[in-house]
Length: 292
Image (cartoon, rainbow, N blue to C red):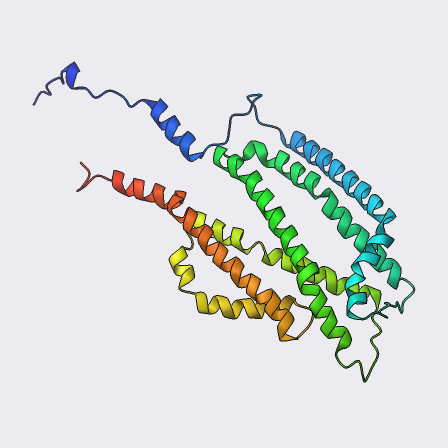
């Protein structure tokens, strides 16, 4: 049986590929074009890594040397809460390298903190060409908010949580024994407390990230409020240096507040998730019935 030709007016026109480009741009699922129109070779990538590592290390050395100059003043300031808790407080060191170790540790940590903007920039500049437009739009605000959250956590630990914890530790049982605190032990406990509290303050951003990719919802998180209370006090018991309930409450209550803030942030982003939208669009585009 001969096949009849299809009239030219009934032949469907090919789809406009520009529309697909617009959709791709909206979702940001493609990295931006290389301005030079080519990809870097492996040798060029390695050379870029070497250059950025060199800048990072030199910056870290410079900031550490600067903090070494002021390390004595910084150490004296960090010992201030101990003197407020116990006027005659004066740390000791029982090893030849005890004081030097604390001195260098403080310098390295503050040098790392001072070099962090350069370190973050070098990492961002290296991965920037491979990021999608969406990722380029969000990565720097997220890094900035994470830095602010960590700094707020460290400040909270030193100014709010550390003084009552130190007051309890130095004055508990003072009528029986005199406290002789090694300076490296004091600095170790302080730095651990500050760092871990700073990490805990990243909780809202972490929950917001999970909500943005559709792994959690605000309703589900609110349903876990009992576990959130228990987890806040368990976390406070792990990161606080003392065992008194007052200090642990000082840390547990803000942690619970951070959880609530995280739920609010999830509420803001949960209806803007990309993965569920894409999946639903694919489901809607499937034809009904069997394919021809």
